[in-house]
Length: 322
Ligand code: ADP
Ligand code: TRP
Image (cartoon, rainbow, N blue to C red; front, side):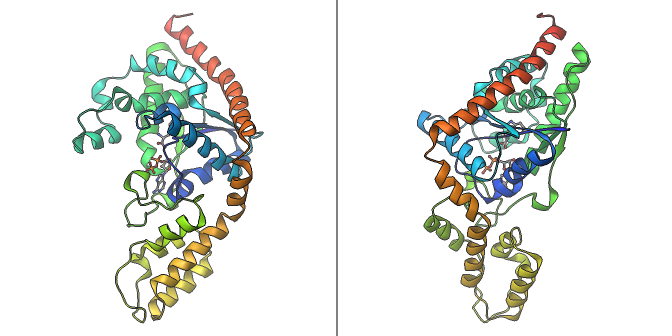
């Protein structure tokens, strides 16, 4: 059975973009693969500098995955910070990776372009830690959203560099990117992202969800006017969840005229509520069960540590530490 691994930062409440671009694949992968999924709380320290937030966002993310159907019997699910091998292998890679190489990373370049002066060493080093996350488990595939492609390429490069320097140690993983949901637009039409404040949060209270959907930006065409479904942000999102027939139906109504944006927004809201109805119920059930949730993460970390430990030991032998 092929091995697959991914990680998600606990950097805020997950949104439709996270779900369609990443989380859905993370849950589905347990069906056909030996699956590993971790909460990337070491990475999140590059932005989250508040203990309560770190704790609650980590917990919330764990509950989200369990509510979406992640089965801890099938997927090894854990917190990155509970497996110290990640940080240890990161240091080893740090000594192989050159600074100009990391200066090519999109996240770093973006931060520099935005004029951020006080960028932490951790943010600069982010792709190296991600390479350690991946390579420790020798996965075949790494499912991520389009924006993570470069990080997977860097992990491949770093594996090659280590293998060339010390001998064959790490498997070279392949990225797994679903093109059809490459970039989910937010309520303002830009990429949906926590950092742009344009998200639709799948586990938000119904009133919040409604507010988010109702604030999707549209043009100012009158109710009777014919509308273009291809340029409408509401339809772009609706298309990601609705059936072919449902999509055809709303597109026809748009073109004919007489269908307002209020109507399509209601349709989208109901679609989201319907799609996540079981998960939203489960979320409410699981959320109060702290021992259960933490128990799963601890069990996952124990299993992960055994596998990560073996890879690290192999790397240490190659380097000459053992
Ligand atoms: P955010 O931009 O909200 O901070 P992250 O960078 O934490 O989201 O992304 C978490 C995962 O969700 C990544 O694998 C990323 O590719 C995916 N993802 C985030 N936003 C989108 C989007 N708008 N469309 C598709 N995938 C997305
Ligand atoms: N950087 C990823 C993101 O922001 C999260 C992540 C950390 C990750 N380590 C990983 C994803 C390893 C895949 C594999 O979404």
